[in-house]
Length: 61
Image 1: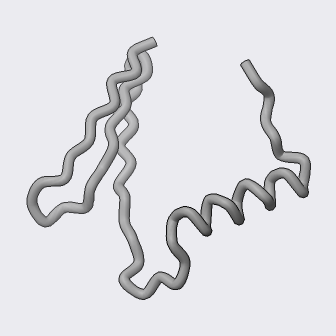
Image 2: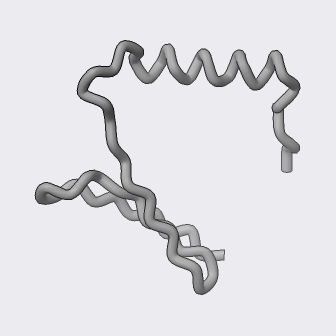
């Protein structure tokens, strides 16, 4: 599996992450709200706690 992760932040386009798995290329654009009310750390804590409370812990490999 080819896990080349490439980050692009130039020009007026939003930052993106590109990952190629086999013959499939995945391109994910990142954007942030200018009117956000929550920092990244708070959001991650909230998501993790929600997943723990609802039994979404995933399957470890």
